[in-house]
Length: 252
Image 1 (cartoon, rainbow, N blue to C red):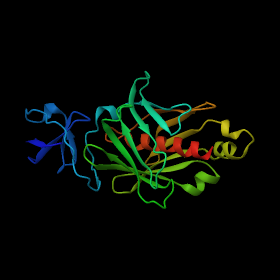
Image 2 (cartoon, rainbow, N blue to C red):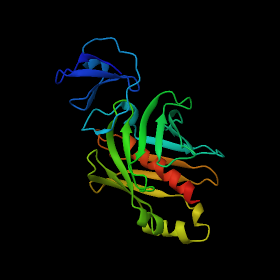
Image 3 (cartoon, one colour):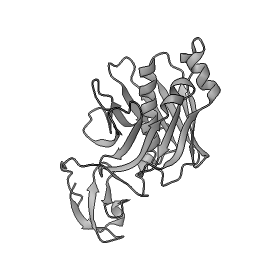
Image 4 (cartoon, helix red, strand yellow):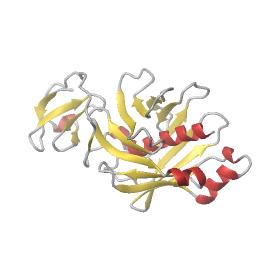
């Protein structure tokens, strides 16, 4: 992407992000819709050199990631993990395919199965931190949106628990399964067939529920947002649910 016009807020150069059809101000770490920037032709997206991701501050979240319902569906009988993100009507919003052989999980989420337009990434932060901490990164700007961290000991032996962290790695929320349900799923005969039900909180307040639909093969996760702040990018917890599906399948 190439900067072609000035930011209406600070005057710094704006960059056009083709994935979201919005302008990005690197100085303010904020998106601007086309109508808020001076009239200019949107530039064609060009390849950019690889760079380390940097934290993003509060910004206008692209409309695709402000819905109140998402469904994550795993492709049945696929050699590698393949997932679709859908809206409530079943329309496909995004697609992800897990790599077969990897030292670190580097999960890319695209607009569709052609995998030509990348929306966001889920990056494992350390090779030895298996199913540990992952950065959720905006592909167009390389800005870190937040982190997801699995509480490995609790999740392995009691009930699934994940931490949601802000771009500066501060704990801001949790995704948790009830202890009783977690123990039943792990230790009762046939417990593996019990679907997961989790609650997502921010600052201790419930903001969403995650319900796994019963399936012998394949997985369907439905996410109902109850009171998610407008500034909270839902890609953070969508990345977490994708990771849950991959962990669950690896465990089975």
